[in-house]
Image (cartoon, rainbow, N blue to C red; front, side, top):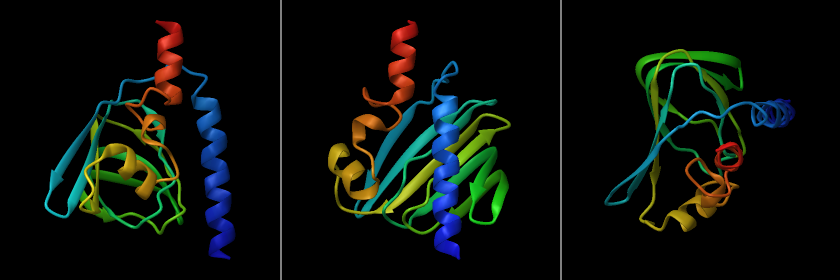
Length: 146
């Protein structure tokens, strides 16, 4: 039953992503941080932004500072203030709405530092398709309008 719910949520988020990509796009800067055995990808999400994430291949930690609604296996969850959460199992895809400016940081256990390899190892997306990448739908839409 859970596998069906996971697939339904991914399908829902994919449909949302298609619709949101037609709207004006927000600027969500991304930073990469490394420590021995750890990689952290930090993103700034401006208030009022609707966004979707990549499908992740691994379970990892998330540190959230702000106020954001996020889809989960149990429905929409509101995350406020500063919280440390464990990301759902591999294969999930999330959507969110930031009520205030929010920082979302994923922390992965890895020694890899090459961003292209990290994206390939940790998500079902190429690095250039993720926020900040030149093949990202948001980036392409902003480039066409600018």
